[in-house]
Image 1: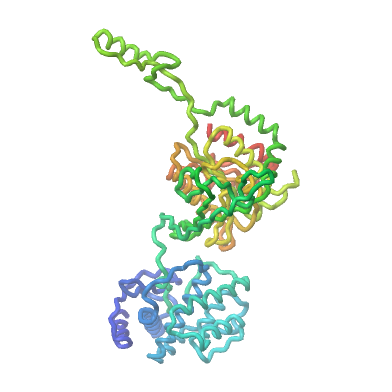
Image 2 (image 1 turned 180 degrees about the horizontal axis):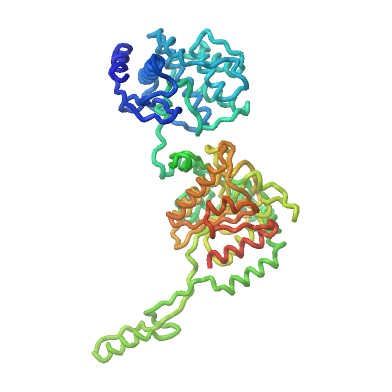
Length: 565
């Protein structure tokens, strides 16, 4: 067909277009456009004979209609959800086909040969409604009483809309996509296939995702601390809903906060990360969006009550910390004074004296204990399931996790380790919410305690993106040892993923990426059935299952001391 199609396009549009073939081993193969030409499948399984000839003509004519009428510059996806991206492409297909039919009316008959949607197709699904809308926009004689299809046709042919307006499909696609969400129709972007068969995959309409490994920062929001308020005694205090007035908070990659900043300036980032798809054996570049959000503050006294209630446990932890001598001893040579002589240096000094040279007086050894060079990021699962009540203590899982984190923070503060406390939940791949309760360099004060007190659980658990974002924070730290300590109550899951293994394999890939970056990841889970998936993600020796959830506050600090000894 190749030579015949070249002549066909010259006859239609008087333009030469490069046609290239690609192997088509799947029935889902669709044409696609690149700057070097139109790429067509080597063959179509669904058509043969004259119908196959017409299918190639329809596919090529549709692709050239895009080249003629679609905007030359690809669009940015922005905040569009996957279903809105698909509907924008469907409406753009209809727009360019109608513009092409204005000049070449016979193309309508060619394309309609492959529109087989019927109004009485049975139960409404998104795939079914999409093909019905596609036919309704091209075929004036087609009748469909479905409200969503009727709305789509009405919006598209509204006299106020101009088919020459390339922005119209995106605007309407966003509206119709919201309606699909309200109808609770399932949509799986991984398995979606463009219909009808002749249409291309619309990848040329959108900006490419770029590098698989790079983290793209999309937006930066700066939150400035409100005016200071005064306490009853006249002392200046921080705003109860914000942070201390003398703490600067810097974006990913910053080391220490600016202690002399007159106001709290907190940078919240939105970052895109790749996500591993085990079915295709490759990473989907910039597939997952992590949005940092400022935590809602609570009452700091709740954290003080946790510390007071666990006074005995804190005392045991303090004794354990002192007994383990967690500061690393370092032997310092060539000292002017110290604990003992350095025998080698003394011998060298005596040789210098006998050879009438000035000896080096630094022949002492002093043993010093340096602070541990360790950065720890505690990553909390804040999904909806953490609100479940634990019968043994009649308290939610989240409250136990918070209590354990508070005791752990006290232990790390006592040791002097640098640590941060972050949390995450997700609402699909475009909205992984990431909250920073405490960052490196912040003191464990009332500001941090208020943030921890306001902690709440909601939505789902997209673990891979959160681990990658936490790894980004630790990679910027100049420490010998870096640790992510993840506390969760269940396996990864999200509303837009129906394959239970998909997010498990992606989380494993994120852990592997962290390991290559020099970040060790350990998981403590309260799910008694976690062995099946948590060992796959973190490795056989890099997790702990807490059988009795009510013992989590007691177990976590001890685990930390063993990990960092």
